[in-house]
Length: 103
Image 1: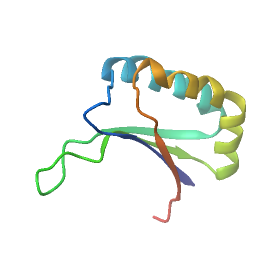
Image 2: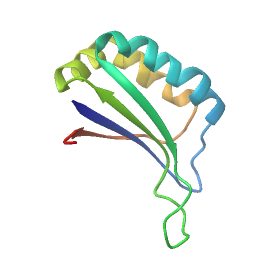
Image 3: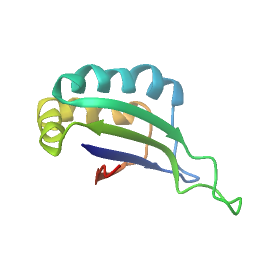
Image 4: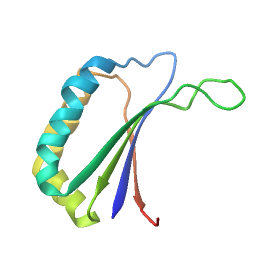
């Protein structure tokens, strides 16, 4: 299993439409990618660091896929559509990281 972390940077100039993200983007992602091995989606909103300063990332999505090949297949099938939707809810560019799930 792998976990794809999608992180949207925070910043004074960044915008983020949470309603669109939760009501349109995440359902689109689930609809398109579930058939390609997407098993679970968790959405996190950054609220701060332990010292009270602003978070580095305003939003994160944790996407669990059955395998790296499944993630690649999902991206090939619908990645263009998913990434083209990003400007509808934010002006930031997400950072993606692929992680092995060890436990």
